[in-house]
Length: 120
Length: 107
View 1 (cartoon, each protein chain N blue to C red):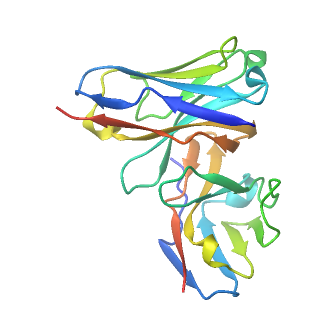
View 2: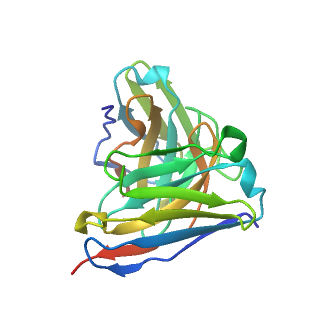
């Protein structure tokens, strides 16, 4: 079964760091670009960033709201994509999803999400 | 930055046709993808590249895109179609953009 599972969410204080993991199964993970998204409580979807496959240099891009604070990496040997979140702010509180980029920005497989709460 | 505008809500009776619009400047020149999200669940891709359907998505779901408006059409609406729907594009200046979402209510 093709599947993505996020983990690593929880409660963090403002200014602290957190690392989320997205573990893939059921497909050749290294062949795909992967993205992270988030959804604040009661709000819409927001793109966080993406990482291309190694065939495309593993390049990354980020939304302006997280650029310079968040970093995406991948370990194709473990089928895991990571979201490293630094200098967390209360407005980063959201459910975080990872998703597979099937083609040209259409995301066909999503994880179930992991909740991140930033609060003192 | 590129903005996508969706109506906050659309209501439709069972068996009728629902149309959810997504407005953007010259959106017809971009590829539009649509997602369905039910409460407490992850989004599901229902239309990609304006009008293609992923496997497993009923033929009742269709899409179009021209000029300044993309449209998701759901024919013969069922109670199970009640959900939030989001349009999405890649924009060279704004990267990946979502519309604000439309809540579809089945009366």
